[in-house]
Image: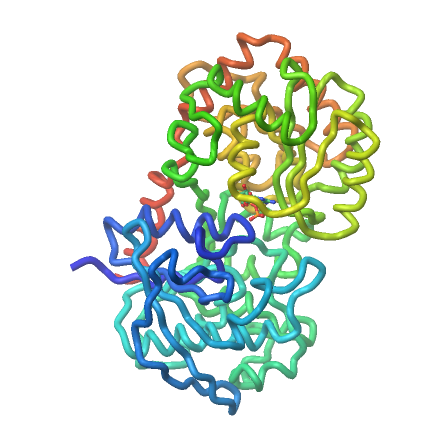
Length: 473
Ligand code: ADP
């Protein structure tokens, strides 16, 4: 009989998504479900359309005690693309406008909300047998500690860090409210500079820890990228491995994508997508290279660098279309630039379909990230025949090779790579991209090559399977 895996994440595409975690929590279980009996579990946020996905109540409501308070919990379920999904409903966790809080800050009671999510996961493991619990990011990390506490739970845990910049750090007094004994408030457990750190629970108590690219796995053990956990991660390095994320080839395929104005199988077929996006963004000149930026407006994504460089980029023969949302000051600064240059245009918001149309329309995707655990955008860009322009860091270093070294018949994706996160380096990369674009034949050959490369989960899912087997044998 196939082993049972409970895969827990705070966001899963298409139910709830703010970034790459949701894509991974959708596509990795899907890639594993032929080998394992995988159940995905996430909160049933208010924004999730229960009717659309046929989400129904699975259990009678039950109560959970956390920090002396009783919470009523309902468990819902549905089958999506062959994967069993489980949803946790509790008003405290789910009745919000945003998943984690408005762009500027998280909700004040996030420790309680996601502490409760972890308690529910542990409760489910008491009533149902699972061989493996796969936890993702800080929002469910506490579950690793809770199930270690309970000798009746035989489940082994794998903990995946998708972004070390978000650790779930809260004031020490939440410890009691989330029902965690004060003996865990130590350096080798959840204590972090006098505060409580959820991610530390995942790292300390999981049987194995992964992060989402081999380069990021090394980087997070350094002062520069470790966000204060470099020492702790180095201490646990024997159970830490970097496994590259993949994308779902069914969801990200220009040959079948229903969001596109017309589907295509090679770069020649992108023309109508390009005119569509130029029109929507009010840009002119289909023969000029179109650069796009799609992502969260945060420091991580290199938005400062982009803002600093855009005026100089705008002086080149190109168009630039930007889609994103996040910190207000970034939206304001980008908007001011878009108002000043007729070849720069901005759409503020989160729009899945528009993002697909932009991947399809673009010639180049800008990704000047300061750090990037893995990054999915560059892989999506490959699939849609858009060349990524990236800072060589984290997963970008693992997935994007310099176009200057392009080799016919290789299995790697090529783009424009720059080494330092500086405006001069980004500008010079964009200039190189514009130059390459003038050599149509070469540009198209490389873009078509990238479209043929395999960025699916096929290889990485095998690595996860091996890990599941080794921790649960
Ligand atoms: P993150 O750090 O945000 O998780 P990733 O590169 O791992 O970055 O994944 C980002 C995912 O979110 C991709 O699927 C990307 O297309 C999508 N995305 C980011 N911002 C937007 C937006 N404003 N509208 C639509 N999709 C977006």
